[in-house]
Length: 338
Image (cartoon, rainbow, N blue to C red; front, side, top):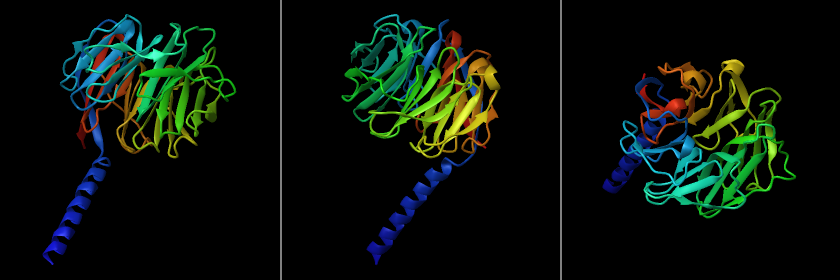
């Protein structure tokens, strides 16, 4: 009987803890700015955190900054060149990957030393804007920087980023355009969005269900609204942001609903899913938006700046977010339960 009672008590306790964790994601939050600093005069384009303390920022001219205190202070890190950097992804405390103009670099010692990854056919006129990893697999996307010919660029790795191979796109149902965001849902399902297509930016999202062998269009809208960012908490519900648009999918990107925000005058450059109910967006002119109800409504946050904000993230198990952008601005947003 004692063993039975002990077992029931353990089951009750575990169920209670799981319930608390689940309910935490449902508790509404509000946001307030707690710190704003300018790290340089250059544009900062990417930010990522491994935990609530350790994070990296990257930007133009090979700019790299690192924090070990949750973004309260930042240390300049020497890069291996002065090329523009577009995105950063932290795999663990030591392994950090960065992509940008004609390059993918990585560090195995937390940013002390940087190595150029072996990437086939990655010329200097290609800018990589986004990449993601799942286990040993990774994808990086971007495009040419020729204003009159926005051609897509896709690279992938199967050995944790040591080598990158260009993915041929001939025969795919993909029209020319710069690819701004990539999301790995599992080892076979991949989403890619078009952020720029000269002369008119149009909404396009493509999906593969066979590990990138082929892609099909899952969303298209022939208006000036590229999709710059996608984010998912559980790999099923997906938030996407673009030029005056917020898109939401609840079935791994097969279908999408659309909301208008700011029209063509506001670029919503980055979205981060904190949970299935909570997400935060940053954009031009200091735009910050927060949802507590899965994207049904969005509340503006006063950022205290008119600078364009390019990228936003919220560290796992934390109560804050970091947004970075033009003229080296870094904005720290704290979350408070209502």
